[in-house]
Length: 91
Length: 490
Image (tube, rainbow over all chains, first blue to last red; front, side, top):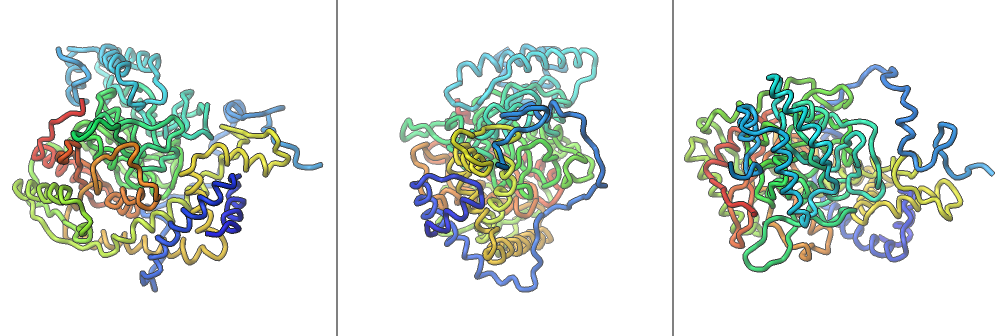
């Protein structure tokens, strides 16, 4: 995988990579992708894709939880006025 | 009485019920043994006060005749499970210091059944690994040593700390999780029993997510019976997990009452044979089939034609799901935050994630992001989902002919810490026999069956039909008796 692609994917994944990591991952990911490409030889015409082997149960869209602001904020690296704090977004 | 830590869960429960020992004595016995075995690095945190307080409660419940099925039994909990007020990090730097304000359903269930937590066990970061070499807290050492040298060996992974703790008898049993073999492979490497139940049997709520369509909790123990007791304690419907099945939990332990396999058909998949298969693994596999045959089972050759594609399918689907699941670690709500010299929110995300995740996790996030990105989705992700369907069909067809499938658990015995393959693909091959099971959502158990020529434990895997853990325990019990595996690591 070339350097440009590695950097693009890292940006999409929001991962800051060091230069040596870019080179290293490029090689490794290239190898893994070459290996998984053997799947293209399988004839899957007429086969439905599946996301899970089990069943998924949907529930009614209603509030089931809440009133736990303190617990929610307890692990925040930074919080103020009962809110999470992030770096300035708007100048 | 000899050392209390020698007792299995079933034996300890008996002793507790007859008031020959107290839960506090039992917890203390484990705690003093833990002191002498810190070098395995099996625990990342010990919880002695919690253990003693819980043991006291257990003694009171036993006195009142209100004991749960695991009352007073000291266990270890894989650090993947959120435990209220106790460090829960999935052994990742990005969750350093995280103490959840809630309890996972699986741990709530087992504590509700009376189990006593001794501590949280080491694991591969976010359960990504097969050797426990990818932990923020350092590698775990296998309590087993091989004959030819004195090198430290890996315990397998990702539930390496749990498996090592069981093998070293610094807990009576341990909780693990299995996404592609993370319970069964370390069980095989440490001479312990490990079961991954049917997908949906245990709630995933509060279990830190890796690949949601594959993750299942399970147990690692010294005997098949102990593994059954533990699995019964953690199973059950939970409305907080949309994939949790609305089913009654069977009395798994009772399945062991049938001491033979008469009338059962055991499948041997021809695709699991290859020229590359280690001769001693092959021999053990054949012995396993012979033992079951002698106990009344019929051995049937079967075919699982798409087996060779299971690993590549897994290494598309699992990273894809992981890249999505791990997007939540952004330095805003919990865990690590690197904000110094970050000029924007995006930069804070990138620095935090670049610093907080280890190499294997980054590699899988990158792989997952790639296969889900525009232009590649159809070729990789969609195709993998279709081949997954074919793998499920292979098992459906096989289970029309047989009740259980017998395979080796791993292609080799435990290797040394410094023998880790440098090529990630080669490392992934460790899970060749375990991964198809997760893709199909079916249950499987690893039972210690023999020793390698180097004197290391080797496991055999039994794969069952959806929701048929009971037959796995029955056949597993027979296999265990026939194998008569008595050697201990120490």
